[in-house]
Image (cartoon, rainbow, N blue to C red; front, side):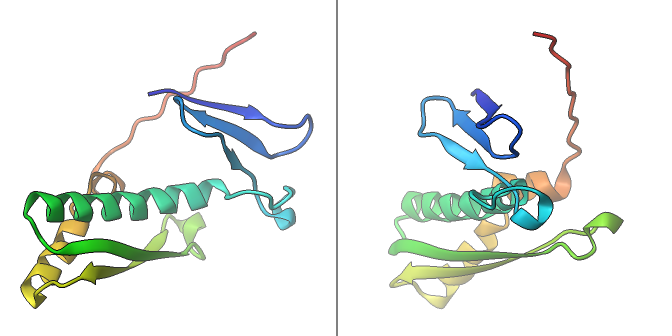
Length: 135
């Protein structure tokens, strides 16, 4: 997997993102932070990775266990008011679409918390190495 991020326009904060062969994504920040507010900001991508992983994990589990899950609807909201003090809170509201028993719904809600990104965000130590490239 390769992610290439490049400044789209000289002197601006907006970035063009290419992930392998997929369509181009963009990142920016709000005008209040000096950007153009033209694309999701890095926190948005962080948050959406959690929701996306939960949705896919639930769908995969349901498919493997032949559950009548037709789809999911998920809302991820954040409270970053205390981020400077090391506290970043995400709230996920997961709705399951399909004819499921109460037990199946409970199982799927539990499975959502077992997605790899949830575990990464809550149980892992992440090491980041930034290398300067002169070119």
